[in-house]
Length: 137
Image 1 (cartoon, rainbow, N blue to C red):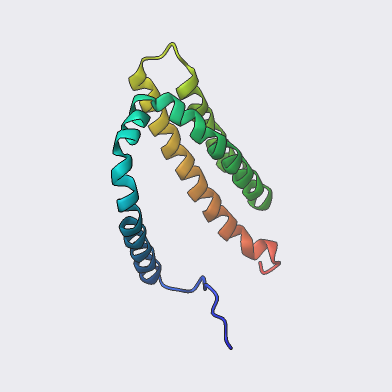
Image 2 (image 1 turned 90 degrees about the vertical axis):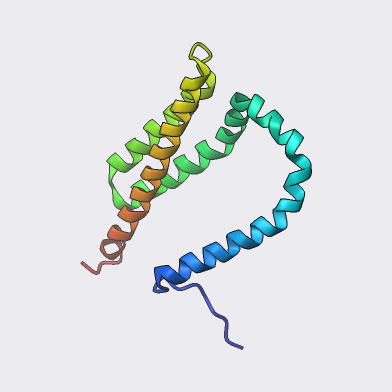
Protein backbone atom coordinates (compact mmCIF):
# COMPACT_ATOMS: atom_id res chain seq x y z
CA UNK A 1 0.00 0.00 0.00
CA UNK A 2 1.44 3.34 -1.05
CA UNK A 3 0.80 6.41 1.07
CA UNK A 4 0.72 9.79 -0.58
CA UNK A 5 2.16 12.80 1.16
CA UNK A 6 1.62 16.46 0.47
CA UNK A 7 4.26 17.68 -1.90
CA UNK A 8 5.75 21.19 -2.02
CA UNK A 9 6.09 20.86 -5.82
CA UNK A 10 2.30 20.72 -6.29
CA UNK A 11 1.30 23.64 -8.55
CA UNK A 12 -0.40 26.64 -6.98
CA UNK A 13 -3.53 26.03 -9.05
CA UNK A 14 -3.98 22.61 -7.42
CA UNK A 15 -3.48 24.06 -3.98
CA UNK A 16 -6.03 26.79 -4.69
CA UNK A 17 -8.55 24.28 -6.01
CA UNK A 18 -8.13 22.06 -2.95
CA UNK A 19 -8.54 25.07 -0.67
CA UNK A 20 -11.67 26.25 -2.46
CA UNK A 21 -13.19 22.79 -2.37
CA UNK A 22 -12.47 22.57 1.33
CA UNK A 23 -14.02 25.99 1.94
CA UNK A 24 -17.12 24.92 0.04
CA UNK A 25 -17.41 21.79 2.18
CA UNK A 26 -16.95 23.75 5.40
CA UNK A 27 -19.55 26.28 4.27
CA UNK A 28 -22.06 23.55 3.46
CA UNK A 29 -21.46 21.79 6.77
CA UNK A 30 -21.45 24.85 9.01
CA UNK A 31 -24.29 26.87 7.49
CA UNK A 32 -27.03 24.77 9.15
CA UNK A 33 -25.25 25.25 12.49
CA UNK A 34 -24.63 28.99 12.13
CA UNK A 35 -28.12 30.13 11.08
CA UNK A 36 -29.76 29.13 14.39
CA UNK A 37 -26.99 30.98 16.25
CA UNK A 38 -27.57 34.32 14.51
CA UNK A 39 -29.06 35.96 17.61
CA UNK A 40 -26.02 34.84 19.61
CA UNK A 41 -23.68 36.11 16.89
CA UNK A 42 -25.35 39.51 17.20
CA UNK A 43 -24.14 39.61 20.80
CA UNK A 44 -20.58 39.22 19.55
CA UNK A 45 -20.84 42.42 17.52
CA UNK A 46 -22.11 44.27 20.60
CA UNK A 47 -19.11 43.01 22.60
CA UNK A 48 -16.35 43.54 20.04
CA UNK A 49 -13.81 44.38 22.73
CA UNK A 50 -14.50 41.15 24.60
CA UNK A 51 -14.18 39.11 21.42
CA UNK A 52 -10.87 40.81 20.57
CA UNK A 53 -9.53 40.11 24.05
CA UNK A 54 -10.41 36.41 23.81
CA UNK A 55 -8.89 36.12 20.34
CA UNK A 56 -5.66 37.62 21.65
CA UNK A 57 -5.28 34.64 23.98
CA UNK A 58 -4.62 32.52 20.88
CA UNK A 59 -3.10 35.09 18.53
CA UNK A 60 -0.31 36.39 20.77
CA UNK A 61 1.36 33.11 21.80
CA UNK A 62 1.02 31.48 18.38
CA UNK A 63 2.40 34.53 16.57
CA UNK A 64 5.27 35.16 18.97
CA UNK A 65 6.25 31.48 18.88
CA UNK A 66 6.11 31.23 15.07
CA UNK A 67 7.95 34.50 14.49
CA UNK A 68 10.63 33.78 17.11
CA UNK A 69 11.19 30.30 15.72
CA UNK A 70 11.42 31.67 12.19
CA UNK A 71 13.78 34.46 13.26
CA UNK A 72 16.05 31.89 14.89
CA UNK A 73 16.27 30.12 11.53
CA UNK A 74 16.59 33.04 9.12
CA UNK A 75 18.12 35.68 11.43
CA UNK A 76 16.04 38.57 10.00
CA UNK A 77 15.19 40.59 13.08
CA UNK A 78 13.19 43.05 10.96
CA UNK A 79 10.55 40.36 10.31
CA UNK A 80 10.23 39.65 14.02
CA UNK A 81 10.10 43.40 14.77
CA UNK A 82 7.18 43.94 12.37
CA UNK A 83 5.33 41.09 14.05
CA UNK A 84 6.00 42.45 17.55
CA UNK A 85 4.73 45.92 16.52
CA UNK A 86 1.63 44.33 15.01
CA UNK A 87 0.96 42.33 18.18
CA UNK A 88 1.42 45.54 20.19
CA UNK A 89 -1.25 47.26 18.08
CA UNK A 90 -3.57 44.31 18.61
CA UNK A 91 -2.95 44.45 22.36
CA UNK A 92 -3.50 48.21 22.62
CA UNK A 93 -6.74 48.23 20.62
CA UNK A 94 -9.11 46.46 23.05
CA UNK A 95 -7.46 47.68 26.25
CA UNK A 96 -7.10 51.41 25.52
CA UNK A 97 -10.53 52.36 26.83
CA UNK A 98 -9.82 56.07 26.42
CA UNK A 99 -9.87 55.65 22.62
CA UNK A 100 -13.11 55.97 20.63
CA UNK A 101 -14.59 52.62 19.42
CA UNK A 102 -13.66 53.37 15.79
CA UNK A 103 -10.03 53.57 16.86
CA UNK A 104 -10.23 50.07 18.28
CA UNK A 105 -11.47 48.80 14.93
CA UNK A 106 -8.83 50.73 13.02
CA UNK A 107 -5.96 49.58 15.24
CA UNK A 108 -7.24 46.01 15.04
CA UNK A 109 -7.40 46.08 11.23
CA UNK A 110 -3.94 47.67 10.91
CA UNK A 111 -2.48 45.25 13.48
CA UNK A 112 -4.07 42.24 11.77
CA UNK A 113 -2.77 43.29 8.35
CA UNK A 114 0.71 43.94 9.70
CA UNK A 115 0.74 40.62 11.54
CA UNK A 116 -0.33 38.77 8.39
CA UNK A 117 2.42 40.51 6.43
CA UNK A 118 5.00 39.63 9.07
CA UNK A 119 4.00 35.97 8.91
CA UNK A 120 4.22 35.98 5.10
CA UNK A 121 7.67 37.60 5.31
CA UNK A 122 8.64 35.03 7.93
CA UNK A 123 7.63 32.13 5.69
CA UNK A 124 9.45 33.68 2.76
CA UNK A 125 12.61 34.23 4.80
CA UNK A 126 12.51 30.64 6.11
CA UNK A 127 12.26 29.33 2.54
CA UNK A 128 15.20 31.47 1.46
CA UNK A 129 17.26 30.35 4.45
CA UNK A 130 16.50 26.66 3.87
CA UNK A 131 19.36 26.03 1.37
CA UNK A 132 21.78 27.86 3.67
CA UNK A 133 20.65 25.82 6.66
CA UNK A 134 21.10 22.60 4.70
CA UNK A 135 24.60 23.64 3.60
CA UNK A 136 23.63 23.85 -0.08
CA UNK A 137 24.99 27.36 -0.65
